[in-house]
Amino acid sequence: MSTSTQGGPALPQERRVVTEIPGPKSREMFARKQSAVPQGIGTTLPVFVTRAGGGVLVDADGNSLIDFGSGIAVTSVGNAAPRVVERVRRQVGEFTHTCFMVTPYESYVEVCERLNQITPGDHTKRTFLVSTGAEAVENAVKVARLATGRQGVVVFDHGYHGRTLLTMSLTAKNMPYKQGFGPFAPEVYRAPLAYPFRWPTGRENCAEEAAAQAIELIDKQVGAGNVAAVVIEPIAGEGGFVEPARGFLPRILEYCRANGIVFVADEVQTGFARTGDLFACEDEGIVPDIICTAKGIAGGLPLAAVTGRAELLDKVHAGGLGGTYAGNPLACEAALAVLETIEEDGLVERARHIGSVMLPRLRRLAEQFGFIGDVRGRGAMIAIELVRPGTKEPDPAVTAEIAKRCHAAGLLVLTAGTSGNVLRFLPPLVMPDHLLEEGLTILEKAISEV
Image (cartoon, rainbow, N blue to C red; front, side):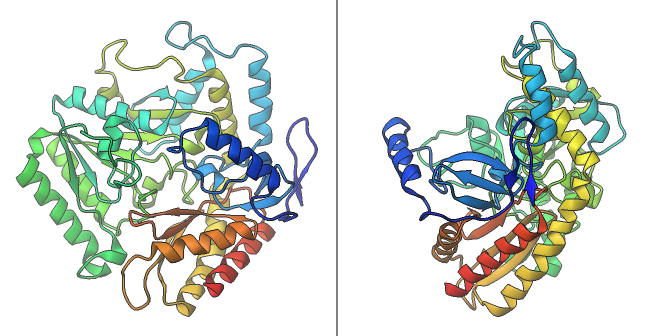
């Protein structure tokens, strides 16, 4: 099976390992990287990619790797997706930039119209575009603070929201995101997340008890009348694909509604069909006041969006939102192509299918191997948490070893988790079944060897 891109030959959908990984050309390029780029820019797998599409990445040495990462949930419609290529190629020949705040263009407006239509809720909405997920979250907080006249922001354990000063402050994980970068932004408060696998009194009590604790913390330590926004990922991404216990999100939303607090859903990683719904909030019928999107929005081009209730976003004065590159016309065209691809190619259903293939095999592995503590996720956003057998003590060492063995065999996997003990799987939604199955077989072999 092969996938084609506009103007180029088909890219075979096969794993092919012709050198050790990384190979000599990639090692040579990595040495150049070491001498030119600061060490603070880390690398999961030091292979240098020359082509990518469908479910594979081809490196400088000719190896074709199965991609279980999608550029961290960015290339959900596949790399160099045909509709994206076609629209961007046409646009780049017309104009590449004017700055929407100087002289606007239709594609920006069209992206905003589409997001107003497809995000949860039938209320009147407004959308504006920025360039990164962190920018989207930071702007959501700006809007909430201005609209409410309050300053406090409540976030949750295991949350990740970005690398800017404010979004670092919102993020729960210290290393590597926060270590040494303080002092952090004020008026940020952290509440417990309903983490079923790790809840002290058991999964069955998780939602109710976690919500009660979070609400008590807000009431007693912050004061509901001082809180502008609650910011939460419907599934915690970098924190380990933690799916809050069912009932937790509705209870927090109910509390926000009762107290005039803006409920902000950070769907940067979970959005655009990744979880088997167009947006992860839809699983429990959550209608956020503001939703932040990025990553999968534009097929690899930098774009992010803030979509929210018109009465909130319209309170911001002219010039209070925006950015030089925000809503770049190439990225807008790519986003329109992504939305068309998701709809025309049935990628919401495809994500559900991927989950139906992955979850049973991973659960069978958990029955065999005591160090797989938990298997979780929805759609094509799946993870396993690794622990010391017979305990819930995180085991980042075995996690890293399994990832290393997968990489050597030609399967790209990513790690995650506040303790670094989670393997997360984000295959492109267009990955053919035979590659998905082969990738799982490689993972199974790596786990059995460890």
